[in-house]
Length: 236
Image (cartoon, rainbow, N blue to C red; front, side, top):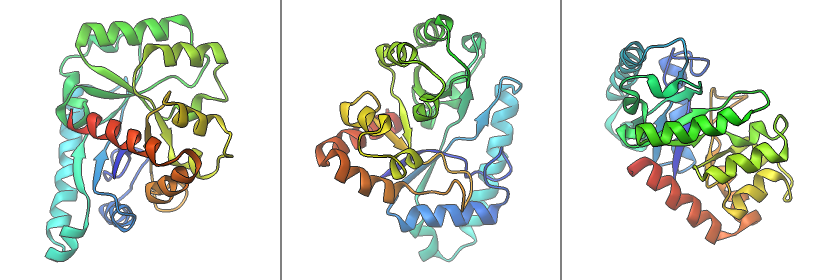
C-alpha cells in the first residue's frame, strides 16, 4: 500500500514538528503494512518553487540522516519515501516556473488543494487550462473536505474534469456506508485514499485500518482499482 498524501517531513508546515515525530509517524505507517509514503508538505502561493525545494531538501536530508542512524533492521522496516508537495491552487498557478519539480516523484501528477470557499467557473476553467498549458495532471486533494462547502453542481463539474481525486482516511473510518465519500470511491468518481496525516494522534497515519474497512464497504475489486490508480500516480 502507498500513502500519497502526508505531512511527515519535520518543520515544513503544520505537520510533524520534529524528526522524532516524523520517525514515529513512519513507524505507524510501517506497522499498518504501508510500503511507500509520499512526503507532501504544503506549498503556498507565498512560496517560490526554488525556496520551497531548498527547504524541502533540507528537511528530507535531516530525516534521512536520522533514519540512517537507526539499526539496519529498523531502517528496513520503514516505508520507502518519495517527495511531492500539496500545492495551493491559484488562477495563476500555470505561471510558476519549475512546477514539475513539485510533482509526485518528479512525474506528471501534481497534488492540488482547492479553495475552501464556494467554487466559481474560473476554478474549473483554471484547472483545465493548467493541465493543457503545463502537460501536468492535477490530483485533487481531500475532495471529502469540500462536500459541506460546495453544491452538487460544483462537485459534478469537478468530477466532469476527470482528474484523479483523493478521499481522506478519516472520511472512510467515520463514514456511514451510504455516505458521499464511500459512494465516490465505490463509483470510481474518486479513486485514491490517503491519510493526509499531520501528527500521531488527532490526524494520524491510519491507511491500514481505513482500507480494511473500505474493503468491507465497497468490495475487493474496488480496492484493486484504487491500488492501481495509486501506483499510476506514484510511478507515472
